[in-house]
Length: 156
Image (tube, rainbow, N blue to C red; front, side, top):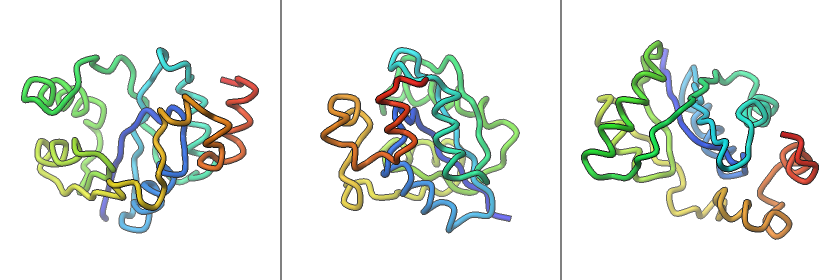
């Protein structure tokens, strides 16, 4: 059985995230999604999980609280982040890590697994969560109806 995982803040969950998860689901038997808590961004972790599991009820969710504030691709940041991530997925034996980010290579190297880069250049879905946070109305085509409704009603 092939097991994969991905990580994210999903703040908010958008079409690029959906594409990443759909790609992963086609390539693995079991997919874990590590959802980082992001209180500073104003999104409740349970709402983000609801957005994901409404669309993909078969993914397995890992809640990740109190993630390190230090990030980057320098050696120290990678070590801090990877030690944290290893604890989050300690019960999972993944074969492949799915991401759309350069840090995916570091995750895969640290865990000695394959990295599957998905749409790094954002050609399929030219969006990022930060753009949506800045301009929801201008980017609402990149979020599904449930997410959009929660965002406009602040139901999280």
